[in-house]
Length: 220
Image (cartoon, rainbow, N blue to C red; front, side, top):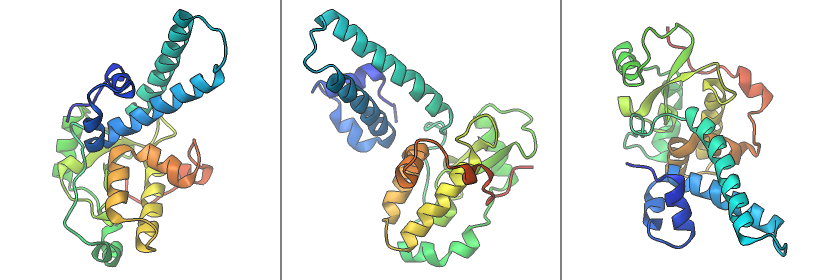
């Protein structure tokens, strides 16, 4: 699925065509919400001021550019949606929760991991530097499928594999406690796991204990 760029999302915000795409694409929907919030905050800040229209437009454009830079960095910590859109198995919420013990320790087969590294252009990956991660964890009904796998590093960003593992456990607990629908958990972790983390842990940055969270095994 092709994602809308910022210009197209701003056009949607202005009431032009394209809104139907947001109903189908969670990644674009999340990006749209970020832009909408940034523009709303800018407008509220300058409501009633006598800024000339051309200066207002320029300042608003700078807001969008700033948000765009932040989004680009964030996107670098998310899997490539063209390679890893996520894939699930046909399981009910009850089946998922019963199968937790078996699924918690599942790792990707080496042959499949090799395909994933190749798709992401990573040659000679360093042992223990990555987790060949299930975007939708098997503990939430994720499938053993290359479309559900990506090489997530342990270093280079605060939004790393250990932090995502902590989110996976928390979502699983919420699903099995009846506080969250399985389909919702799957959609949110596949669409933008960082936004899901920020939403459910109510924080803009990863919580310190999660930087050392250990659950899944590293690729070796």
